[in-house]
Image (cartoon, rainbow, N blue to C red; front, side, top):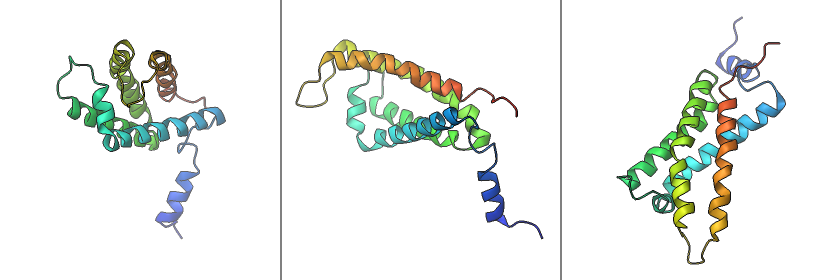
Length: 147
């Protein structure tokens, strides 16, 4: 008797290919996927926030916010699909590097989103946080040691 579809799905979910095997990498993988999916959704929920962050030298601010939101969603979901994990991670590395100028723009120009001013140090403190996100995405591109 061959396993039905639900049995095969359960077996594949428990297989080593479903998620990274190393516990630390598995946690980082899950957190990065959830973070990118949440950020992607936010691009559609609070679009104006992201539009304000766009450097003035870029055209089509709203459209680029939507494109980056789709890319974040695709990258986050792609991390959850074993066959797409590596390409999704490389896509996230590229995306995180590509949006870095917007983070610099917010720091240099002290972009304000709320009636209460945001302290300039907060924008500058955000900049180094991009590095661990890029490093995490890059880590997801690496092969795991064979057992």
